Length: 167
Image (cartoon, rainbow, N blue to C red):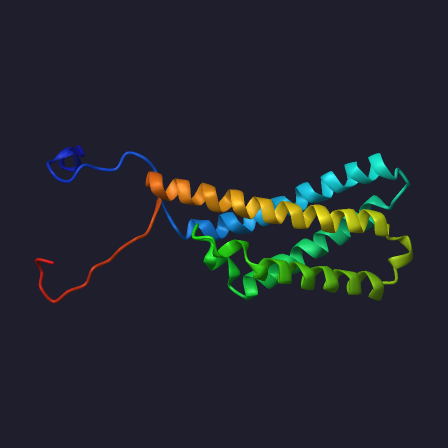
């Protein structure tokens, strides 16, 4: 029934190939996963080092607010369009965006009047772990994206327009 599809022609690519636009979404997912992992690691480090009680829901909400602030700042500046594997994504832009997000989160916590219930130790550990994970994950992400580009799993769509039909 579909025999016409098997006729002579260019060999078809049998593996999935993504365009480089996928890297933007993957970059956002990468950062979101960094914040989730950072909170889990921070809670473990805090329990191991300090061990005092803290309001879990308050701190989860603070981490979510900070992650959302960071992602919204990055998206509004179109920072994820630089995820191409060329190395521009490990610059000062992410650090500055992180510091702005942390400041906005601290101001939000203060404005809601829950600063007294907030563990500054856990907050400091979370900031340090988040920064470290974001930095390391960007390097790993860049290397992985570059490797996938060299394999041909990620590529660019190219369209050529010309006056001549033979082009």
